Amino acid sequence: MATFLPSTPSLDLHRIFLTALAFLASVFIFLLSRRSKSKRLNLPPGPPGWPVVGNLFQVAGSAKFFFHYIRDLVSIYGPIMTLKMGTRTMIIISSPELAHEALIQKGQIFANRPRENPTRKIFSSNKFTVNSAVYGPVWRSLRRNMVQNMLSTTRLKEFRGDRDSAVDRLIDRIRAEADSNHGVVSVLKHVRFAVFCILVSMCFGVDMDGDEIERIDKMMKAVLITLDPRIDDFLPILAPFFSKQRKRTNQVREEQLQTLVPFVEARRSALKNLSSNKTAASFSYLDTLFDLKIDGRKSVPTDEELVTLCSEFLNGGTDTTATALEWAIARLIEKPEIQSRLYEEIKSTVGDRKVNEKDVEDMVYLNAVTKELLRKHPPTYFALTHAVSEPVKLGGYDIPMDANVEFFVSSIGDDPKIWSDPKDFNPDRFLSGKEDADITGVTGVKMIPFGAGRRICPGLGLGSLHINLLLARMVQEFQWRATPTQKMSDFSEKLEFTVVMDPALQAVITARK
Image (cartoon, rainbow, N blue to C red; front, side, top):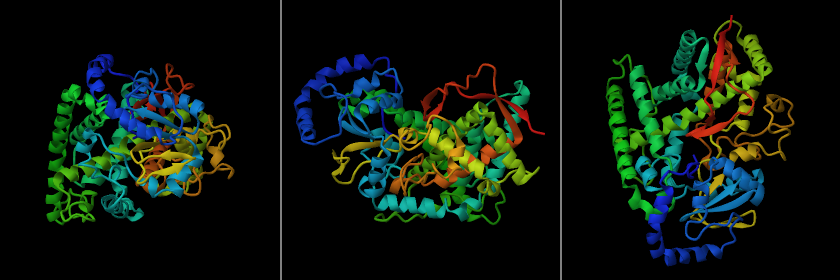
């Protein structure tokens, strides 16, 4: 997720700002000297900011969500613009042409990551993850291992049983809630748990009960909350005012290690007796990490680093997929004709048996629905933050090495210059052949829900599979309708790790006959 401030400021923001003025004054000359360097650069345009803090408090003090705030600015400053966020420079790109130039044509230069704040360094083991690693040997080793040894087509087939079990459990949980709640179910919580169960099985390869999975999930949510950006990430001089938050960060990291290291040890032990251990899976993501050789390093990953890599695997695929499925059900409720057409495709493909993941590969309309879903509702509205490895020009402007480069994927997917009626949810646009899009962005950027270029999400295939499979089973088993109190016209949204519906989707289900 892109690095930016929460949409609403903390209650004591102004007190912190006033108290910090004395400190800011003492370094004013130093910061101005740094600003003088940026003035010599031809940066993209942007809103005027305050001395020293730039646009930081304008953003933090806005009543709007960050992506709504940026949408307004795009209409004023154009497809590439600059925000000065304290000591950081943020460059936001919302043009498909500029995104393609940066991520594809100049992909090697734009493949880096910016400097991390201290909190993120703790949870990334000093940038020892696929997503956070500096573009170089460590990143290549970690990504190659994940893609080739875990996310290849052959490997994914090994986890079909885990997916089938999790989807069956999802259907049972939905049915049970409906039976006890007059047919009404909460969509997001159920699909999120199902996806998390699949990823836990793939990651650890050891048998767990529901309580253990819930405990891991609770801990992972605590990690994500702790990673929310703070004011001192952009103004390090304010760090003394956030000592309690830093203490909490260390506590959460310790809880993360205490929760996950036992499962790391359990898998290590299971591998020694795999032939006699009937509850252990034959393969897991952890198996690829225990003896992983990292280019430029002599040692294999430590237990702390293993926890970090496993956490990345779990976090990267849970909320993004669950969010997409919540929006998918909402859109099917909004347009019953799409839901009916999808159900007919499922029935004509599989008859009365359960739809499986091999079936969904051949369902043309289902894949069109998923593609339109990702165009209209990318799970996060910004790609993970990029940085350049050397100063470069983009769109005639200077991109310095210390800038956070953000790609506004939501704006690209809604661009009226490349999409007809972009506000309309219409899967048929992908069946006509006139508006198809390469989801990887290689042949041209029109939608990039998984990013694009060298740092494209390695879980693109897995995420698409999970969306297709779970959506197909949910439609096969149930007809979905709105509750009397749920308005399906405005599709309000809010940020909770990913962009979710506000309020969360409640739906009425009827079992199919």
